[in-house]
Image (cartoon, rainbow, N blue to C red; front, side):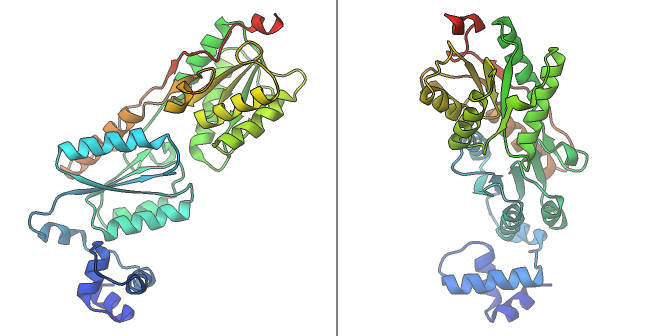
Length: 335
């Protein structure tokens, strides 16, 4: 399909189709909706070679994240945008709200906007969505998509390193009864962290007790609910690791609500090192996710692709434990 057929289906001029594709103002909302519907119905993908015909056009990168409301992403966005700005590259970003179908639409809209490259920094990825970019000859880079690493450049974060350091710390404090707040099974990043925790637990000679694993929704409320389940166990764990910091904060709230002291009665460790964890009481020990480094690797990967360098992998990054005040020796809970 070409732009003329899209214009005929939408009953507009090719100039109007072009304005909608490139995000120019001055087109009525109803017309924009009609053009987008025609584009979807005809499976039209703009010719990537046409991008180079626009004299003096600034390069444009797309950045797709999972959740614009999740405080995990601002540092990643800031780092990516700073690198792009230094190179005179503009960045547009959107989010999927953890919905694979929205990822498909996000990539399609990025292609319509004639981006030069796309960083897909989401946990939910289906290859069918990525093929749109491949067909349009738009370079991609992914984050922690190990199953697709052989086909697409991939910035990998080895979660097991962080969990290993966390378990080293807890064992040194005398903890051996350790619970875990997992994320939703449909999120690949959450499952990756759960598997890394189980791997680290086994490496430290500790048994996995199914009743000491509860599942949350990656948000504060989900952490509260999951922690309440763990606190109801008899016996309950003396320490709890959470898949992310938001659920660790929820776990802390649940402990406070149950009049269980942190860290005297139970220790809590989060994952990500979001700004919020240093603001709660007590400040949370957590595993620092190298978000800024992920952004740097992703940006560099796209730059290399645009320079014609075939780079299917990127350096593996490692999270590390950050000690604060939410962990203490297990013996304190008996005092």
